Amino acid sequence: MESRSRQESINQIEEHKKFMREALKEANKALDRDEVPVGAVIVCNGKIIARSHNLTETLNDPTAHAEMQAITMATNNFGGKYLESSSIYVTLEPCPMCAAALNWAQIKVLVYGASDPKRGFSLFSPTLLHPKTEVISGVMEGECSTIVKEFFKNRRG
Image (tube, rainbow, N blue to C red; front, top):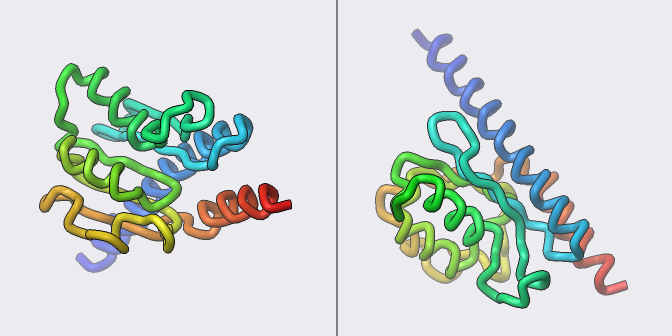
């Protein structure tokens, strides 16, 4: 029984990495647009139903974060405002605004790569998320952290 449980855990880790790689693809799209490189995908029943990246500069909209864009796309696909059977994979820990939006959408699982020590939701209020939301952090943390650090390093010159 232990080996079956261990195999399920390994499979789950691999699934998280698979979807985080898709979120990283979105982060690279943001990087190509000179946006802060954050990407997000929303998954339901093992399928990606929404994907996006930061568009704050492109749209001149401070709320156009990857998570906000993905939530809008996913709820439009569902035809409803709740995502209680979905998971979001995001390369960087959501800010308080995005965490609150995920709360309102009642997202089932939040999986993020890199922590955001300056603007992440957990610094301000870890209760911003819906009480039933499961949080998994640190998935592909190195890759997710590097893309953001390199972006800001290059911006500073």
